[in-house]
Image (cartoon, rainbow, N blue to C red; front, side):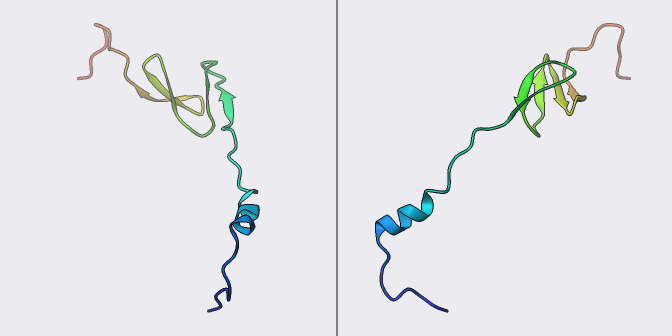
Length: 69
């Protein structure tokens, strides 16, 4: 396996690394709730977890008429 014969300078390594830049995250607006959220991530709105416009988890308190039995 080839190895460098001599050490590379710090400047040479820095030149190579200049192309790696941090990018800002992409935000989207949910069509159902109108809330902004990170792309491809679920987000909470008023006790409900939404993903792609659908409710995944609902943690709102149940009313007296609703029973889970």
